[in-house]
Amino acid sequence: MKQKLLYLFTRTPLHVGAGSSVGAIDQPVIRERHTGFPVIPASSLKGTFADAWNDALLDEDDGKNGVKKVRVKKDGTASDAAWLFGSDSDKHAAAGALQFSEAKLLAFPIRSAKGTFAWITCPLMLRRAVRDGVLSAASIPAISPGDEEALFPKSSQGVGKEQVGPLVLDVTKHGQPVKQVVLEEYTFTYAGELPVGLGAAFQSLLPEDAVWSDVVSRLVILSDGMMSFFAQNTCEVAQHVRIDDETGTAVGGALFNQENVPSESLFYSVIHGFKERTPQGKSRVAEEAIRAFEDKLSSLPFFQFGGDASTGLGYCTVKLCGEKGA
Image 1 (spheres, rainbow, N blue to C red):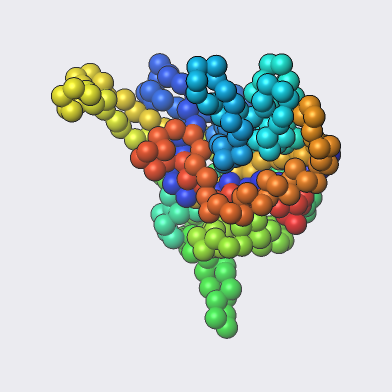
Image 2 (tube, rainbow, N blue to C red):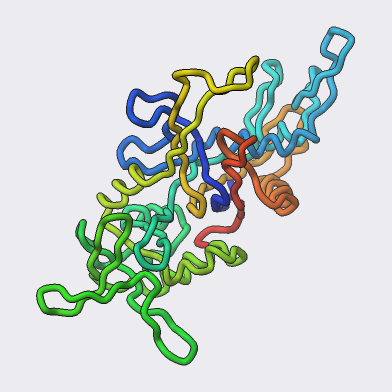
């Protein structure tokens, strides 16, 4: 078995829907039940990536004087799509050589009173990332901030001198100078610096992205509870109305709200590669499956996940790398 890490950085808002809801949001995004963090299911990842191998499908007689595209033919001949993502034949069933985990949230963008926006994370997210091999154990903060506290860089390195961090506000509290950040309508008092090297470790995950490169000075660690609160209550909500196909006008009473994860959110997924499992296969090893997947990713600039592709939602930068950010 071969393991790799896959990073997904949203370029546009993302909607991987959980179906309809009876709450204020008619179409919410999929979330973890126990934390409220948005996730991208493994089935969504696998389906999107499998579509990139449509050009590798085989021609098969459909029995009606026509031709259909299949992963595995009736005689057991398998395409590369079947090798990597599994067979579509009940007579020659086989699992694919690639196995995906759900994509977990690692950094979430949020509005800031100063500096426009910040990326927030929390000790729980960092401990998960350490467990999955994304970050080193030194990334876990020694101090767990309270619900009214935060860990953030109070200064940043300027040209020849230190400068106040882009998010930091200098205020006086009980007659003493303190540093704070204001995220949405909530104020958080400085409780300490980020773990040494954490900002640089985050930056190294997507070194080519010009927006993400600023994460060193914009990263804020909140308590697990406040992270869950923001993840559930500060996603984008877009209003839509259904259009009548015949009249081309809005249908009365058909207004609905759709929730989207904001752009500039960072997710990661763990991918496992296995040796080939297709019948009559070439017995290709796990490394070959990972290499074929990596070659395909390098040939495409981005992928689209979730719904509303026609309106530009769900476009993500995708990067595959080794364990521990290698």
